[in-house]
Image 1 (cartoon, rainbow, N blue to C red):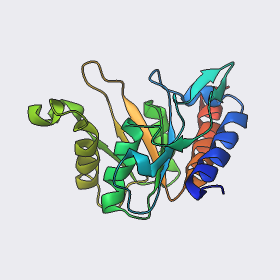
Image 2 (image 1 turned 30 degrees about the vertical axis):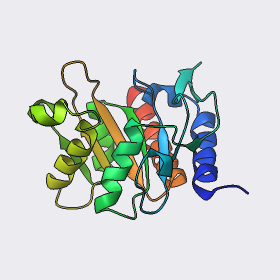
Image 3 (image 1 turned 90 degrees about the vertical axis):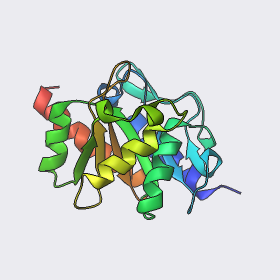
Image 4 (image 1 turned 90 degrees about the horizontal axis):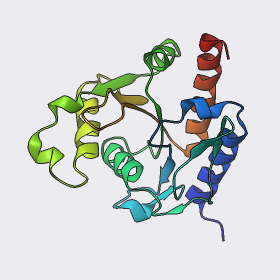
Length: 188
């Protein structure tokens, strides 16, 4: 029996893997696309790609099929977001670029951010505390539920954009729309 979230992440992964030049959106720390079960409690309730999604010959590439419990960082992100926005069950991290933020805003997406340099020491020193804190900050900084959350990085932390949605296929579709606009802007 196929589990719905895993199948949805698998379809989303096929979409982004077949999108030409998707690799230009993948950050140095690599990407992951996740989808949580309803009311997730921990990473075991979140389908993700083991080993993350990397770039190979310009395309997104994953070595393994999605499975539950395969992500820590992105699982914590979607669990924290889902506590406030239960309909948002999926997320994908992509590289930070100011022009991608502008593209998202031009598409009419709600964009919010948080400043990692303002992260309290107690949060920074707590294993796994940074991501939920960042989600809370981004929600506080936005009048409407954000579709896109980003930060500009901090010492030793890569700047990042996270796209969110109801399911992984919806998030992959959004990422591909952003990719088309980004390629056009960059002349690729």
